Length: 184
Image 1 (cartoon, rainbow, N blue to C red):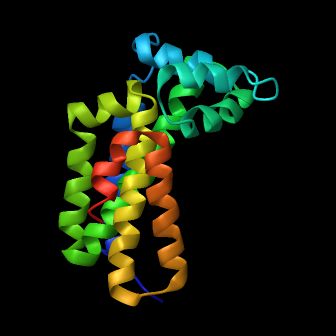
Image 2 (image 1 turned 30 degrees about the horizontal axis):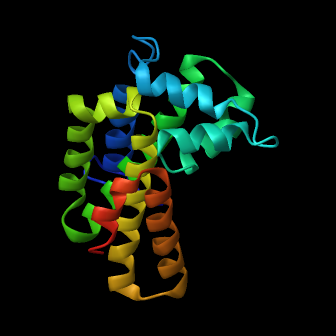
């Protein structure tokens, strides 16, 4: 039977992700939705069938993916807490991808330290808690980074497909992702 010790990779991973989650969820509803966040919240509740959402999205000059996903997310619940939990989910996936990417290139301890640093960084927490579509873009970019590394390691077709989908997802959630995706 295998025993676990403190230096175990999986324990470091769980501690780092738990800290990141705690920091992203802590005081999540400390403010009400502001400007852009309120616009995304409102647009996401518009009807897809009759084209109301489409007409509203064209006026914002933003890609449609975030609003499309949020439309279905807000069918489950409409509270500010639930609305922002989507971003926390995106932030958690980002943290996991960062950990796994760094673990492949360095040590598990350094990877866990970076994920904990993300949780202690004001700008990261602010972005996850209040900046709506940017959390989705960051998630897709972190996934694309992870699969870019995987493609260079093992060159599997599935990794290439996921990498391409993550790159496209990043650009369809925020056009600025192009400047990160293009060099990859």
